[in-house]
Length: 103
Image 1 (cartoon, rainbow, N blue to C red):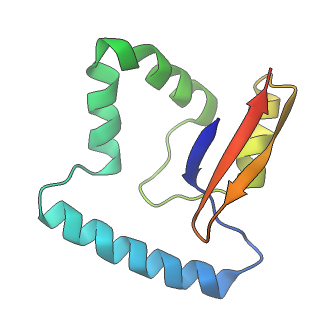
Image 2 (image 1 turned 120 degrees about the vertical axis):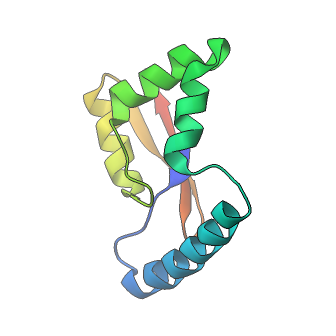
């Protein structure tokens, strides 16, 4: 399973409104001392229990820029290209989705 920000490219106005709200919240959180995307993954990679899954995540998806939000269809396609037999979105909100994949 992979849950992440995954836009629906057929709704550009909804996406723009959601992105503006999300980035406003992210900026306020950073000002309050919350870690950003890059820093969070760097810390995860240093944790013994998370190091291997974190490395595997980067092997599959590569480096996402902060705010980069490929579609659920993109995530499913990448998972299939990396060896999963099936992958598709099983849940979605305006900004997030959950993709389930089967080996």
